[in-house]
Length: 106
Image 1 (cartoon, helix red, strand yellow):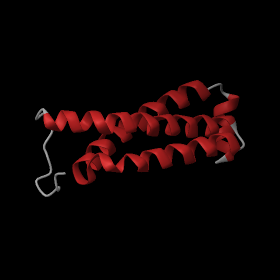
Image 2 (cartoon, one colour):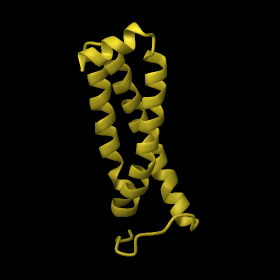
Image 3 (cartoon, helix red, strand yellow):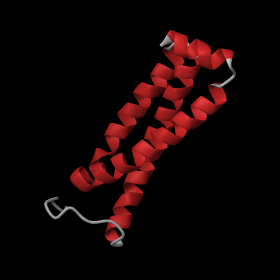
Image 4 (cartoon, one colour):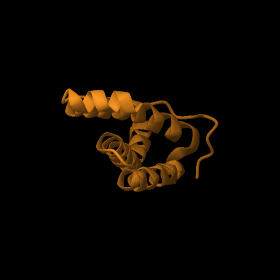
């Protein structure tokens, strides 16, 4: 792993790699939010909060700028997912996404 990070740093690829990883993290979080809202509703928002806080704590404690930046991206993607969770509930209410027929309504 250290060889890869050294190669990225030596060839000035950090910006491109962080950009690519950011794109992939956002792309990963989108279906996670949809599935979480479908199965557990908005009450699963706290999972994203805990994940975001853990990633933020990791971001300030790890050695290495690249890994620290990736953890920061994951942290703020997690925090943003909390907002998306509630917006997803509205998209389901409007009929844009399917509602889980087995989910209990409150």
